[in-house]
Length: 161
Image 1 (cartoon, rainbow, N blue to C red):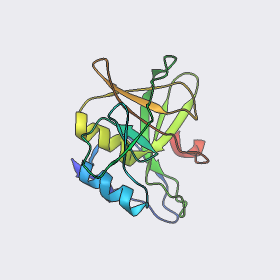
Image 2: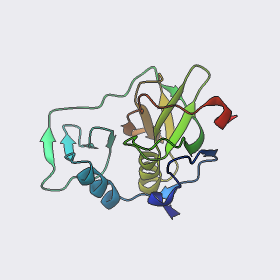
Image 3: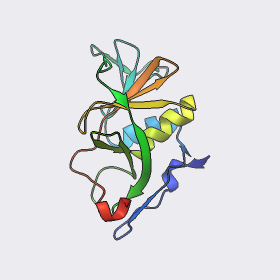
Image 4: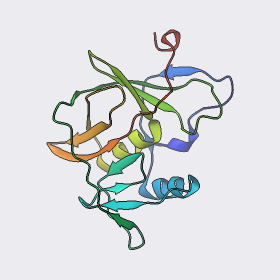
């Protein structure tokens, strides 16, 4: 598994390809959270969150406890992971993006978070209930967390076809 920080991105770069998981560890997650000047919180249900993701990872002593729970959406349905890519827009605060879809909608999330779940848990299932709703992550009937969708970003149709 390659390091997730090595995906190609930059001004004028455009691509969309098959998703291959890259390595993303809890240490990478914490370093990225610090870089974004965010704080790692521990929710009442034990999930770690930085505001963009909640994930079932062990907390550290200095993580702040918050009275928040992430409740899975019962209407969520299976999502197909279509691919990974970059649109070439510098200034977006996010990394390379992953596109999911089902028959009703498409949803885009930060590739780093998909990599983090796959590094931590292996094969997982992704579920969703709308373009702007969290992508839920499950494994063998166990809720592992969720990834918030990216707003105001898209993959042009000419790039994904």
